[in-house]
Length: 262
Image (tube, rainbow, N blue to C red):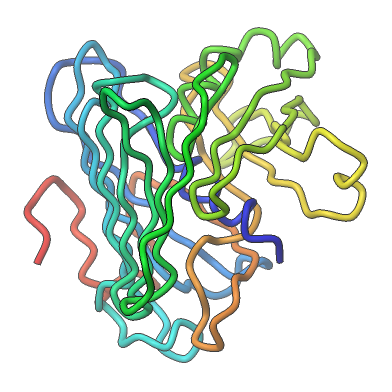
């Protein structure tokens, strides 16, 4: 599975729910096997919001299936920290996967914007600068970008933009479009697809995101995970953003509300 789409996986898990106050907001994602049958890992998101938009944001990923993930149930797989204070669609962030010693992220200072990547604990940190030119998004800034263009997408327009893929130390061209309507839990929902803006889209897997058309909450993600199975490869997942933890998530040490992570 191509890693640059795996890198977008976490980027879609954002701004779920709540409309508004300047406070802390939390939500969980539950990542299943592609067929939706087996829970593999969980995600716990905590955001500090101003005017309904995330400013600081942490995500903790925990194993829910040791056989697949190679990490004991309830143990931390990865952590992610975002800072949206510089930009609403291109956050400064760091992703750490302790078991692999892997790190990636984006930095911004008086020297400009740059991506960082470290493939393993004993590897050197690689860097690559990039130019900020709209339309552009990176990682979890993808969700605010979709919301900014929601009306155009709903009207059937194709929205092209640059995506900063820190894990590839590169910027790639993507296109987003509406692919249809559906229902989730008996309520209307709309599906959008993100794919490469080139002929490679015919040979590279795309991503499908499902939103509530009224609240613009992301409800579901279908695509490649940016985490790895115990074999070391990426894999397709179906991630559901639920208000209530499924039975399979019990014992995964994933909090229901906002609390400190161990």
